Image (tube, rainbow, N blue to C red; front, side):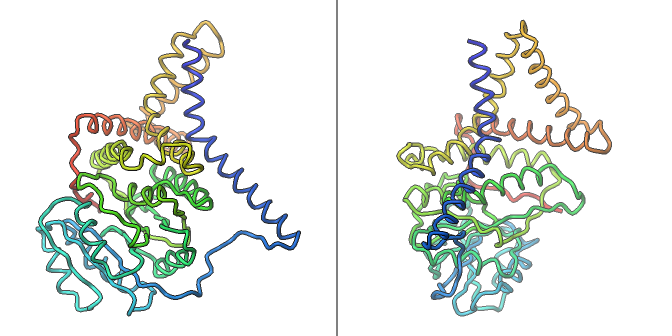
Length: 393
């Protein structure tokens, strides 16, 4: 029994972190080969890309803001400088009971394309439920106040909506750290972005990032006010309806990481609680009848959320298998990994590849500990929907 449990846990962990991405690469390669074969037979082929050239839809950039006085002026300047026809573009700032002067700074903006929708504090989801229906654009682009968007990003997102089957488009968020060239989150984020790119080629990106994504306004349905991870649930609901959710790697936005690791851990625990909460909001994606989106959801998300339990199970089961040399080695490997994570925590290694490996191990372990904390909050229903902005440098 211990051996069965060990291998079940190990294979599920291997699937979510390695085999699933590998399957995406294989499927993409097979699709490209099929297209090339059709092209050789005269049926057209080559990878399909969004071309543009159709009618230009109206766009509303919606930003939920809570006490963002330190960056809201920069956000407005960045938004108004985006390359998109002025007569078809607006910026809608939904203030969630800001008390630091954010609303006054928005009102001071002389550009008539900027609108402010203030209301008492009730949480980001309530802001979106209020602002998205009142947006004038056919396409709603959602972004965070501390996210700066590259000039061409809106055009590159919007062109995908020429395909009537596309319901949402995720942009590429690049994280940067003003004090560190190498930091743990960047490696993991690049890995996640690669997976999203390949999921997008199959029209099934499993969740977006609040920094930059676009949806058809008509596909939005009001979320329960208690929703914690709106940027995860909104695209999933669109995917559940049968529309494609694609990824545009050329639509880029930039966001600074935080130096406060305690707050970053709290943010990840909050997201984890919201992830578990989201399961009852997209039941259709749990069923195999949903096809590839269900496979992606289970592989990319559900198994990731189970990773802490699987890691614990693999470790405990391994302890009962020490009569075999092979399992002694696997236990040693697990112990070495957690030892590296500890060294990464105390920063015992000062430089070189060993320090980088230890830092990544520590980041991975803390990320999974945050899932445990988030799951506990979910069970106790103690995670509130209203969010606090993360302090930046």
